[in-house]
Image (cartoon, rainbow, N blue to C red; front, side, top):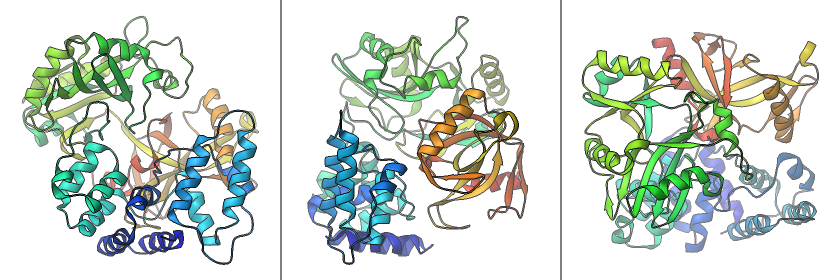
Length: 507
């Protein structure tokens, strides 16, 4: 298939707010793809190419873009092969070779294709082709039940391969996709509530567990082989030998565990989140020791537990990893739930997660069965631009522009971001130095006082609430926003939505 056809579909999807129209356009595209084009095409549309990051930044890409071609000639396979070549480059001279390959390739692309290629390479696809919409399109194009496609995608962690199987395989093969030790699955997600008592009113009897100030991990063990994955399914086994050692000591042969890891100080209190994340962001081993804490078990010694109630899973978790379980209590009493919440905060943790005791593990989904409770309003937003500082911050990028996701395009481009405020509060000297370097690396354009950046950096912001405002297109502005931390473990697609923030007006 010509790449131009994929680009046209992406533009069609981005230009409509109708979910049905999006599904129609994507389904029509999927039926026209050759079998070996399906997985790459799906990866391009959702901004998750199968090759992952290939070492191309905004600056390198801008320098490689020349005059566009007059006519479309590139194919989907051509772009996939380009990413293979770029991903294979390493060592001395690789930067120059990467630029040469990019220049040769983009010279064959039309202007529309150059823009599309840039967004694929930078992981910034804003077509409105959200994974949920594309999942529905796959089901329609393949004439398969939507639930079957969603489950296969969740358990395989790969929407592109799920699409290929749905479109080229049998219904039985699609339904046979299940847990496989060593292959990560999308993690179950939690909704939010203002208090533990409110959360318990939603869940009924529940396990009220500490919400650690750490990084989420998924641990797979088969015999002596252990693999550790992030919430985004990246393999970081080589960075977490402490976690691997703990997993090898557990009294099982095969297991899949869901949990978090964090570092503790001499008194057993959690160290700052950035110290935990430093072990995720570099290959070199650090002195910081990371301890795993597990809150769920998905598989043990040949037995899948996804469809077992939480009560059963917790009993197995206690047997397998008792001393490494996250603290918590099972209760239906709101006062008990609030007590656990207070204890979690006193221990230096973020709050609690309240989990319905009869809930199943819904991989990759956010529902009302798990509800997180934090003592302050914190949201994950995306940095859109940064302003140069003044005074003692002269020469540093300081005031950050914050955007919330707008998946349906209610206030702008579908799948884009809508600005909700600015802040320079909470930034340490170390963070100021880091963001001055980082945001210039992903710069899109600049004015005299502001650097506009690719919307790929997630930052956790604490606020006292929101207020109505005509200053920003979403109709709200953040109240007393301050930076808590940058979330290296999260993609922009996981940021909070404008509707979530607007919901605070109603509260």
